[in-house]
Image (tube, rainbow, N blue to C red; front, side, top):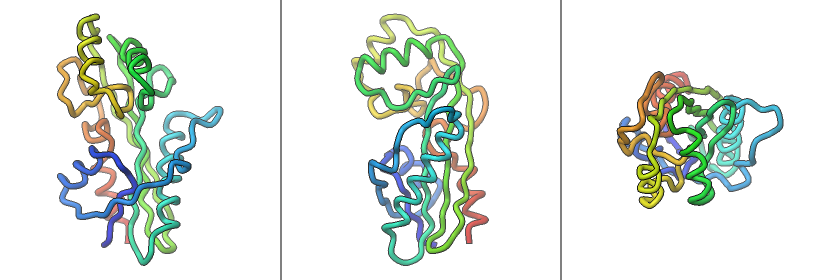
Amino acid sequence: MRLILASQSPRRHELMTAAGYQFEVMLPSETAECGICSRESTPELVARLAYQKAIDVAGRVTGSATIIACDTVADIMGRVLGKPEDRRHAEEMLRLLSGRKHAVYSGLCVLEVPGGEPQVEVSKSELEMARLSEDQIESYLDSEAWCGKSGAFGYQDGHPWLQLISGTSENVVGLPVDVLQRLLGTAG
């Protein structure tokens, strides 16, 4: 089975490789990731974005393949926290998350081309962030480890101030491998 990962995320690449998959990477166009629609829940958002990425890449694939697309965001109290735009935005996210529980949602789409029906599922994990001191926030912001990471943090970085409460760590990092394995088992 020819697998195509529709993502530029190095973390998704690492998770796929660690799970033993051989795959190609084909990036979805920037227009495949349009923002939040009004009245759209966080699970609906990540499902739609994963689907849009898969469809975008499918339009450029020659031959047969199985496309894997995913979108992951943090959510606190119904507020979606995507990737921070800059340091100020990352600080705002960290202060919002500090001392609170929050959820991480990943929408996963597996699509066989040509002619397959998209399979889309959403995974949820819950985390709790310890209350961060001013020094911890400033030190973390200075490290720039928040760059390109939903919610301004990377669970895979092993921060002692993050605790997984439910779900899988792979989902938090950006690819629910358990769901992917199940969907690929039913794909073709």
